[in-house]
Image (cartoon, rainbow, N blue to C red; front, side, top):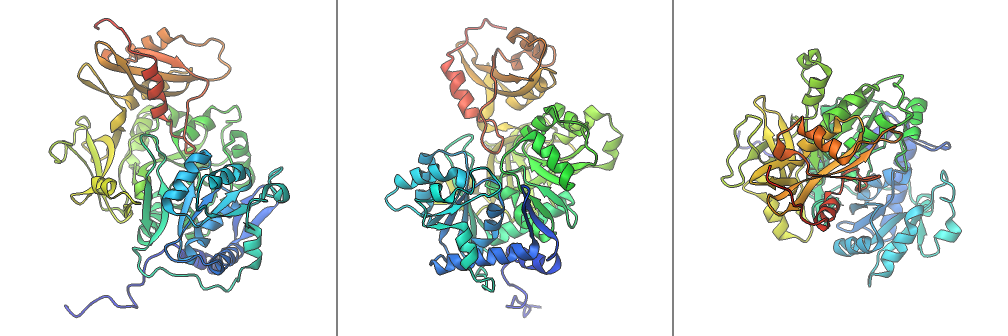
Length: 551
């Protein structure tokens, strides 16, 4: 069979962009986007709007290998740009809306962005960022008629050369979108959240995004015509690749500008939301909200981004949310590990089900392999749920590399694996469980303490709303656990530092017990809901060394 080889007919480049074209045909009259009280589009309309924007961009000279950036929350324009930009052959770069102007300018300069779409409420930051650059990108103003002051084009758009509405209006709806020459062509550039270090530019190809989009639908068992609420920022790893995935199944995208628990409950009720994604902090806020009445119909939530405490999972499920747990990184384009649920687990007590669901799980069907290896030998650790090592993986959705960072790319992609920098264990049943980021392991008196395990215990205290544990310098032990805690509102009596420490002492080995508890109104977070532990580590360091007696 040596003569059997790939040809043009059987090897066209894989790309997620074709999902929109098909959606316009199959689901043309179905609702594609809902936003606010007056904005509703069908899949046919969304396809035409994306083609118009792509046509206008091409007329401006935008084409292959150009980087186009977007600074926007989850609005209809943000969703459309996930298709419209790469339809020109350009590379899409979504930026975090919580970044300051200096950081935005650094990222724009780093990627050589040619054009920046800017949401109305980020206009000041964008203009300030552009002023810091010798060769700034062209700015495109994106109004928002659904928000008070969001359509104030005259006052806010003076520094902008174009508006998004102009590009839609003047574009050609018959535009032939630019297909990739190779499925390995770059399609998106995402900057990491920078929770542990300076942001890095992660580059993904058409093939990787295609595989991740389809794989995510299969693993989460997303049916045709779901109603998807955008609680997860699209700028975070392209919304775990669900912008393209929801198009593939003809779903309805309910756009949401910012997280607001009462609004989310209203949208769930008004639109019959079936699916949503978010970090564990989203689960915590929804279950702790005063509006958290039991749902009238189940809502599927896919959570990732940090190990979810079992207590939070239990609380959210008691409200009617059906929670699936996964694991992935910006470098994997979405979730490539999921806690695949076994039917026999349904017979277990609720607390045990929550504990099992808190594990990250096994590789998804479209991924190739994951493992936990000893950092010294590179060999697989014993599958006993106790021996820790670094999580490594390989599969089609792994990034091409870090932009302009060959050293970082070589360090992350070596020996046929992607080294995540995350610390975990493999249980005897083959399920992965994250123990920590490598930087978040606390070494106290020679013992390794997982901050995640300490946090999980504190979350079981009924007074605790949020918690993050980091290392604090110690004159004797080297470092000790320091817990930053926010308490639930409306408590008749607030626990003291000593009481929380004693609570932990009854539930864990003494060396793991926090030696310091610092109360905060709110913990610092990235826009994706991850607690910024590097900020807390700096605070703990400035507290100075603890001077505790030997225990």
